[in-house]
Image (cartoon, rainbow, N blue to C red):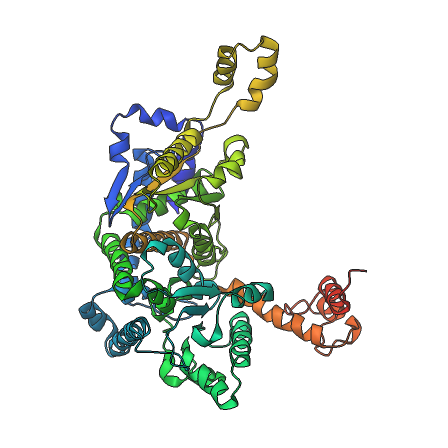
Length: 563
């Protein structure tokens, strides 16, 4: 792309200037900001000027971004490697829009929404009771990846909006210690379980589901009731009715999923049932309303005022022109502590690729390494590296002006730290400034020369600041949709398919083969699955063969000793 080449040329000058110098434009703070859907984005601390933005807008235009945005919203099969549409946005659209877009399938979608709403109302009102005619107290959601992260981040983000009295827990980790810890805190008699697996074959999810099933029936003495409790108190979100019913789940308790909704974009579907059971139907509707508001902004707004497009283009400028390989997500809100992990999955699983839609090797890098932590904890951890290493790590600071706690002084200090950190990353501290500060403290020249270099901070680190009045279901929905669309835009410009995840699949295949080796002969040379080291060495085409290193580790597991 000629624009990418032009951006790299423009980046030569950008890498030698200070972001501070850009504020010679006294209107920069106002001109480099946009407001939409209850969110205010200040991107004035980015190392980008008007000319560079124009090149970025030209890049977006020549990538046919407008047409591809419409293609996604119109249900074209933009997931080309799996021949699927990408229509998670339809799940938060109006009823009329659903009917117009989905045609006959809209009836199933609308019916699923009604069923989901009825389950929430029934459980919360006491109309739906447990097998022993008691009210539910707890909900366990079993899933992994996209069937987990959206629920997890929303449950913690919307804690002040939990209004149903139900305690909702999420289980994803295949580590039995996590499951054991969770089950020790709840009672099987009053627990509702939701299994989320599109195919009902996901190894981690089914392992946890089987363990929870065994735990639940172990507390039921009557064998007839052991079957009934699963049929009564379990729900599934899956396309595989045969496997779900064979597991023991009542067919009437199975809600569908659709192949045009990817896992990491599925919170808006029946996958969100556990969340709705915590926050209620009205708040869940507000979550979708916030996302829909951002959808409309994204779909209809010119690029120069379009929040997802601006964030995406600035991300490409940082990644491909300025050469910054990471992105720090820094929510200054305890409720958003799970957001960095959610965005790690959404961003890196979507765009962490090096092959184009056409199967060609890309000549540019794609997704950044995403990490982060809630403020102010991050200031006392990895932000030391951000201030004083030679690496420049662009950041997204995320903040609600009004906190949800009664401790106003805490909120004031939290907000001050958020604003101060973005300022400090931009301004830094020169050797001259450090020396002057130490001199003002009465320090000797010798001590100043010794200490001052250790107090230098490079500065010139770019950041966005995303601000909302308060964290609500609406603003959370808008925030999640904002990042969804930002990631989509970057995928379009990088020419990757943001909606598949083939890299995840290889680990699943090899995981099954490692298990087979564990269950086979103790000797690596006589594995029943033919997975010995020679098969790895002799077949360059056999990517599923296990190395001698892995087989050696399997031996140690089987002997339960490292000796």
